[in-house]
Image 1 (cartoon, rainbow, N blue to C red):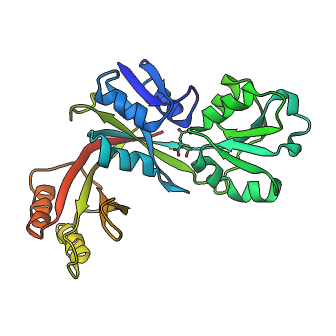
Image 2: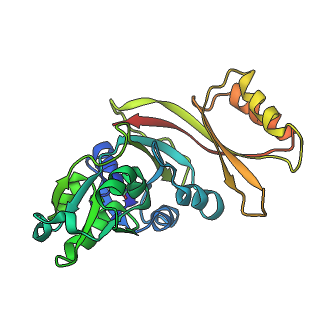
Length: 282
Ligand SMILES: O=C(O)C(=O)C[C@]1(C(=O)O)C=C[C@@H](O)C=C1
């Protein structure tokens, strides 16, 4: 099976794909939109991109691209632990404290903010499309005083030295990666990592209606549908216009979730099912 992922080789997304689909033919894409487009135009069957990090929150680019540009169903989710390491070219191994620029994905830099603040007071942060893109850049510029934040696989892949391991500020650091597909077909994946099912909805509230969000939440509450996430994102149609992304802690059924959706639509909300899918914890 052909699987696209946010590359280049050795991103955290690559690690998640390699663990979940050890026999897949993997295709790396430089950006999240390129990876999602590749699924849409049939270059690959599945695409895996990051959605949310426990320390830093949502990957807005993924949510926004799926909602506004390329609506593909979510057919699965992988939750993986994230360990960030500081790495330099071997040339800088002994004097890594002198580096003046730190390269990484914005989420990775944010996850290590306390460490960076205390260790590199004057360093400049340079944001890259992924952690492994940063590691690759550092490996290609051996004489620049720069470091990357990335994982162990990237250090090996690009021949860098880890000079400080586990520099993320909080121990519990996990990221959710979603699996998207062109057609809403179930993943036929038997895995011991299976941990449950979720349904994700996009809900746009009617304009200027007092108590609308309260009514939306009560449609789930009285049906005892457990919500595991609620987040708002700009609808991009005007200041103050937002939609909500809601995760329900169960698979789409015949009664409860369709009943809640019908109730929301009767309240003039617009509802879109982004996916009902299994999740796997690595
Ligand atoms: O850059 C990578 O290695 C990615 O897979 C992306 C990403 C993210 O977008 O949050 C994934 C996990 C980590 O939280 C840091 C970066």
